Image 1: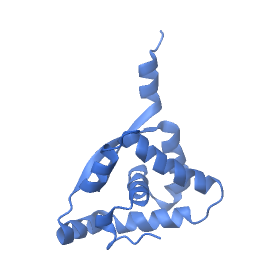
Image 2: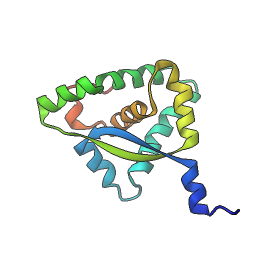
Image 3: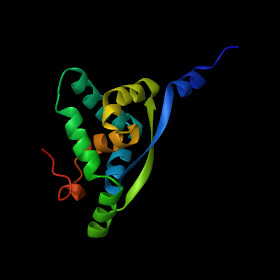
Image 4: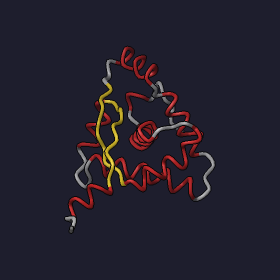
Length: 135
């Protein structure tokens, strides 16, 4: 049985739900040259590549952003700023998900948490600067 190219591509991709602020999602959805998933993959790829090239600061920095944007912190940010956190679906190649699990699994950082951190680190949203200092 022959599998179509579209089905093959679908099998090679995995959907991941991530939380991000509404303004952050608007930035990602407003891209002229790439869609939301492509932007998130670009941010994730930068972090994965930096780690694989020996940058020892990636895992602790991702851990810091994950911790500063966890459920309790998101509630605190929402109450202090009225900025909504929304769930967004992004599509990643399964190989990228496996890389995230390889690199961040020991830190118990899930692919969803990693991607939330990657988006925050990539977009550096103004509404989060008071809560998540950026280097």
